[in-house]
Image: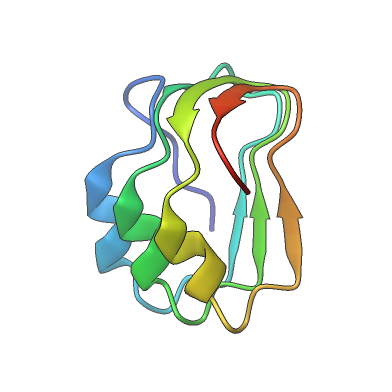
Length: 82
């Protein structure tokens, strides 16, 4: 099923969704930062957030997602190393 966001950001509670495999929020008007809690989603294989107004750094924990096969963060306002 699909979950609708109450606000235009990704809530930190996303880290509680431990069996989540796909996050696709491309061109959804998302702003704010990528919560570090995304890095706890060990089953995540797709993270697509391109075309939003996301700011800040990519959380280092994203690099530890061993199941991640697809990562699209382009066309945002991210800074720092990948």
